[in-house]
Length: 206
Image (cartoon, rainbow, N blue to C red):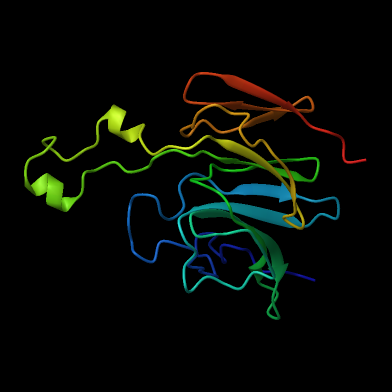
């Protein structure tokens, strides 16, 4: 069946627009930071995984599977499908909650590796404090940004269903910031703010 390009005839115009998060139009702790991850399954179907900070938009599409509390952060999974006009559209598949400032995901062996970074993304003192001249520009110091952080947590999800397969719990000592994941040789590696590198083995699917 012939399909129309995802970006239109000029490959620049996306035919579908989805509002996923950040209804408040805020710049801290809300919205999508980082990249969208892609995976092609064994049947040739294309999947996209979107890390979301903060609550989901009231205008977000319906996901048939929602696992966990999505108030603080989530990972959304879409599959590329075709509508009646043979245009490519994004089909919501599942959403996994329980994330605190998630980084972009990595996909391997039918599994999604996603990191809940636990960092404090607040960068400014707020309008009231800034107006009184504290800290000059109102930007938080490094020490202040290290407050109210949580341990980073590695989560492994089934790429098709979003089912939680593993989580690292308290294994990672501190939070992390825009460091990402490395997956190779049957292992996944994570680095935290304390400059520690953590290596987790990946158990084969069977």
